[in-house]
Length: 534
Ligand code: 1PR
Image (cartoon, rainbow, N blue to C red; front, side):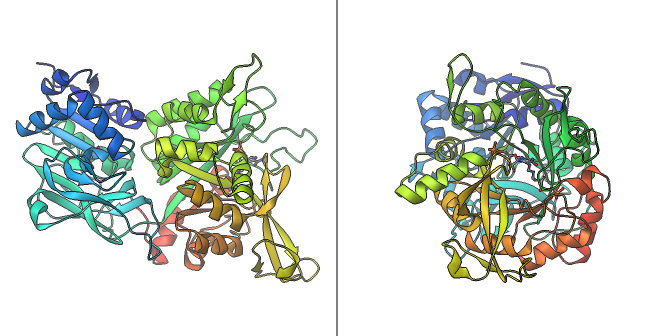
């Protein structure tokens, strides 16, 4: 009924499937969107990227008649690829806001990862596939790292054993893909899994092509530590968006010109870091707290263009808060975040507003912040909180009401302790809350990940603040990204050996081309740290 270059996409409008669209187009295919149940039955090849929560997805599918159409399409054994929630929905039921009934195609249940033993949930990152069945789709992908982001997983059982094509281990063994006839579904995100993911996607789109071969690599076995490249973006004095980089958050040159340092073009650098093997790319709109970010359309354009070329997760932060523009129109932070998601972000990052939310929550015991709203709509795996603390030395822990650490090197007056004071507005204003207290509070409010900077270390190249990162990563059960201060490959192995950080982020050393991403990863492999190699 249609040409071989067209694939049908079921996007029921619950979230961002831009990345899936970008990957399909990148592989040279056109997309036909499903508008009615009939479109499902008429498809030659159907991609079903589930987004949002299980219960609300089933509601939409039932209400629109698409649930029945999907069951029929699958019963006819027509080519189908479910992604993430698109795999989970095939099962009998899920515990997510439930129990809720699913499509009931595969026997079994979907359950939350158990964080009671300290397992970090959501499961975010690159984990190794263990192939249990020969399929064309996953050929050559055994032991490859692919990108996962989820809190719920389908449980393997005797009843569904015939369906399983691969499993993955995270706290326990769970189903990472199923395959039966022409029905395929994956829990990971092929559209965000770099070259391995694109090759899996391509095998579904053109099953007869011989081209898409999974790239050769070293065999992986577990969740990898992530290496993230960060681009601080702002307008320079000529009004052009540039990647800049500060020293302790000061981005102006120390020469007489005092210009905003210009380290390159955001889209070009992001694409280069993807090619170089970055596991994720973050954009921070560092003057977002001043200017209204939706007024800052170039930043949205940067995101759109970057997401067409970068097939690993993209995070964007800066300026996510409620705002009233010059004409009196009010924008909620949820609207700002939605615009970022629509433009291609996989996660958003909140700085200043999260500090205010945590302060209010600790005072009143209740929260009604933007952080909670955004995480309710998009899921907590999509919400990062970026902390910008500054070290404050004290003689004894009793001096302050905040959690202190015994520091590895003493303060200027011989102080043996420090607490880490949170700031807002890019370090300009200090607030009465510590990084430890903030991290605990935002975890409760629904943050899915913490980006932990340190103003003292930023741009100094002297290594990460191990004391701070250990304190925070021991305190929460969501992933912590260590940031600020990377100057050499050894700093990365140090932070993974001494703390519970799940990822390490750097900016300056990558922008100035002092240390390539590949060198960081090779050093980590040599140090016995599992990383994704391409
Ligand atoms: O408060 O929600 O509008 O978010 C603003 C965001 O912008 C926050 O995430 C905040 O961290 C960031 N930001 C604000 N001002 C600056 C600045 O530099 N003047 N950049 C800034 C923060 C810090 C790191 C940096 C690492 C690694 N950038 O992300 O990339 O320190 O650097 P290094 O490897 O060179 O040491 P809101």
